[in-house]
Image (cartoon, rainbow, N blue to C red):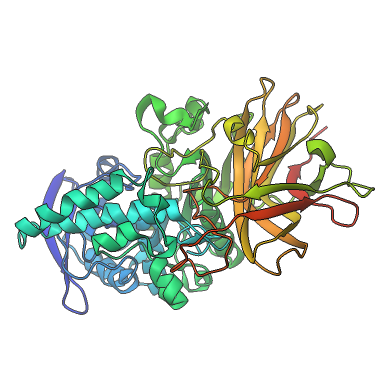
Length: 558
């Protein structure tokens, strides 16, 4: 392999972006695999493809710093320039010495979005993308979720990239950088005990002190149209290249990745989907089997997918077909591969969501019951007091935060002991129940506050009474205080078998902090709100107001 460092690529406005190019030493020409990243082109962060394996397979690999990051010139504005820069970079990469003139793209998270941005712009040389663990609509997992701010990601990511921006200024202002860096690091290191708790949440003081652009939350609150550069939702009809989507059941962008696949397939575009029991950044080495406290087995690992292949090999087969025009059977394979948790097995499917799933309601009942039978009497409602000064602390889930808050499945019993968390549980199951698909809660509730949040979590309770989170969701509401209303809370999607002897559990509360910002219960805008009040919350489950969670159950094959 030969590596050429620091290649300049001039964008249409004259800004120069820098890249490193990895070439095979065999005779070319070779297709190009492009990775555009804000995390440093010599960093392995979110590449999610072994460049050495790709080069040995006969591909040129290009790692480029996006505008305003690392060595590349220009303004750092997250998602501000990726469409035009993506188009220009694909055309530049296709013309590199040794290139066959066709380009594929790879990477995850932000670098998954840079692929979609380029694909929407449609440079003629782009032939395939593999966006992993990335979103579709920034209001559903990147900036916000159910109207709440994705505070955990917003704070951590903005300060991390702010530190990188400071490092860029060392040469021009070493004294200024050395003066500013300790405060920024202190704010980042203090996110869990201090910085996340500062108000207002919609203009987080720690980010303001750093003086750098945030991930985009603050711009979107001020002007929703500013989210356009980060938005893929509604643009899939402009994408002509095949897309191989990779998701994790415990990834913060799980639903967005699923939505991207569904949209592409709905437009008749070639699309493939793989979903593993993974977090946003799965642990490396022997710990790669873990998502939180749960060991999903060797077959779950990206490097040992089903003990028969690896995610790298699946990606390279995809590129072989679309970039080298090799008839290797890719089009004959099932378009969807999912890992079914609980039984811990991979399974091929012909579509997502699964057409055979049956939406099955499970009703909240008196005394903490959860049954398929709806209430037929006027059961008394349940209530609790939500105090934003004492929120429920995040424990696992689909998230990206600081190290104090790892993603994945965790024992929820400490959460369930709180007085402001209502728990509803089935009897032990007489047989396995598979839930695969999107989960929604239909909640009849009232609050005495002008605004509040409803947070719902689905858990799997094992025979040792350990309750582990499967999925959750939040909904921020504004309404008439004291007026009951039916609300729908989106818990996103999962695939999990609740084994015989286990129990299905629902938690209902009003906070999951600092994953999501606290609703202060006043109705004031999050950009300015600092005053708090408690809220008296009431959950109904009677014949006229049957609160229920709707689970997509896969019928058993007899």
